[in-house]
Length: 309
Image (cartoon, rainbow, N blue to C red; front, top):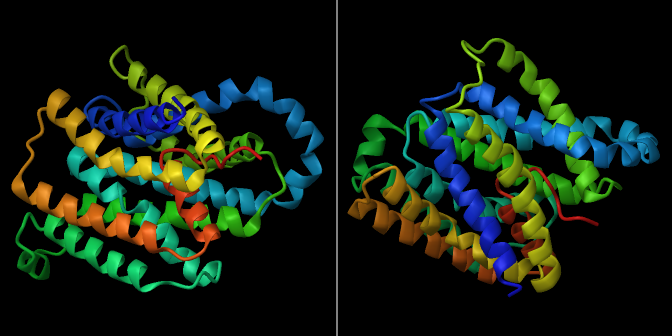
């Protein structure tokens, strides 16, 4: 039964990737990014305000760090995902997003002085080959002529930003309870998103896009992190991180069934090779601390929340 907590969390985050794709025809990327976090902020406010008052001095002392975390996790990671959904499939987004745990481990090497093992390096190379095969549609030589598509580049940059977010979260260790830290990051993220929101062509909420905003703001931003935290508490971060490898599988199934996206052979080959590289890197990453970093950040891929203290 304990395994159901991370399993349902990963399922919600996978559904949200499909929600990202559905939103492209119904609402501006800047609008859904802003409304999503505004909704989460408003729902958290009654519970977080007493904590804000108690920890106000700590919040002021670490304001710049919280601002940086909000920029990386909310503005860059989330916004780029919404813009990328305009040009690439949900299936592709799910597979590319599976690189997040490995990117976190790679960034932790210089910032947290984690020594890389041969398995991590080989896993990284294997995943790179899978990604090249995937984004080239099974024709790697085309990348030399055409380069990487805008959507794929956005997802990769967003994943790097979120991987850096996860590592900095561990490195800085801001002395705030997890949900309060998330709440402050959302507040700073909303401030940074406001100019983009105000310059959007249309920010109108309609009967068609409100359910998408609600799912992203409640299920993906609040319910899924809660389920994940419960899973980590019952299983441990390293064990729970294994469930993150189901993200591209869940996303592909949902996208094929509900969006009628086509699964091609290059998707299957590139996705399997990429996932094998990630799993190899996870299994061979040295040190318990490194595993927890990768697990915690990879699992919270669609939130900016760290586990509760």
